[in-house]
Amino acid sequence: MLKRSAGVKAARLLERFPVLTILGARQVGKTTLARELGHDGLYIDLENPADRSRVMAAPELFFADHPRRVIFDEAQSCPEIFNILRGVIDQDRSAKGRFILTGSSSFELVSGVSESLAGRVGLIELHPLTVNERLERLSSPFFDLFQQPVSTDWVDVLLGLVGGRPGSDASREAMLVGGYPESCLEGDPEFRQDWYENYFRTYIERDILRQFPGLDLMRYRRVVRMLSHVSHTVINRSEIARSVECSEAAVRDYMDIVEGTYFWRSLPAFRTSKIKTTVKLPKGHFRDAGLCCFLQNLTDASQLETFPRLGHLFEAFIVEELIRGLEAGGARQLRYSHFRTKAGGEIDLILEGNFGCLPIEVKYGALTTARELRSMSNFIDLLDLPLGIVLNHAPRPRRITEKIIELPVTMLWSHS
Image (cartoon, rainbow, N blue to C red; front, top):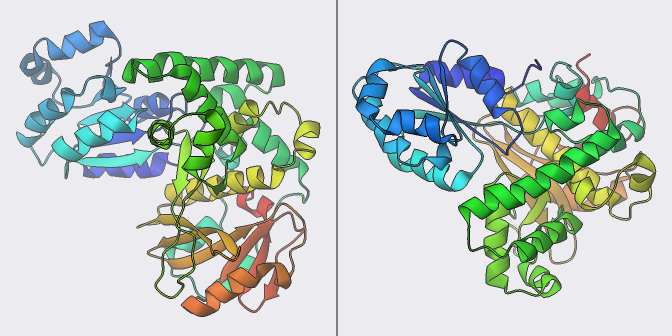
């Protein structure tokens, strides 16, 4: 069984709250993690009519017999469970670690948790595997830095970080493989394509149709595939609407569904009163690069190497690796955004949290010049920030300017 980076945080929350809720897309390992944490408890699949009836036919008797250590899988399929749990928990608020919920749709689950279980639940989101998890490596020391404020003291540490073998081959392979455990651990490219095909069809025809029975599935598929074309760009819903021949309101609803089922991440625009000419539209990208490659009919490294939007795909992939590493590493008050001015200046990712503010630019190439980083330099000066980082395929860390450090992306996957 693979050790998940989020497991440590999940175990901590289970010790501190009556309920732990694990969110995430289907097939990312939520049930496996829940069963590992609640190995001595009862497992209830709320999508199974027999299991659901076992709980809901006589809730008082069920919870009298099972007052703690019960796993409720896919809890969004039985929204009534949230009010019942609130009453059970309130009978003994001091008891911790009593229940584990999982869910693959944020609509009912987050609503139920926020309305019925506020203050009683610890939330964690489980993502597809990071590269380090897939390769069974420890987390990079890069993420340890975020336990302290960003400062010039980081520079010596960053310059001393060791990356893996330089080059873009490993990155392209990691993007193709993706992070869904069953497909990426098999090591068979043909199986991976079959798996993604069936996964996508099942997601559309089972999960989405069940939650939204009146949905136009053909048009929804077209929107999802269109989003794979514009992944990690500024998202203009009106342009997507014209491309798929539907209303902008429908595109908004479709995008809410894709994001609410944890396939898509929206990065809001960074806002500051110091800069008046920023673009306020969000960026967005597929959370799993392998799924995005599948939707773009990219099946091998040679196709990916000549793909005209490789840079965007790579940027989205690295942004997700950063977000997953930071969330698993315990950085607090995390906020993610992108920065773009109307004149075309942009920064791929602005990280904010209890560590401060850190701008990060992602480049596919092996060398980034100071001239390419004028937007980041101006941003750092205007907000008086101590540091900015560029992640690319450079062979080793180096200082580009006094406040901008270039790091090889392989450093994210090395623990030496």
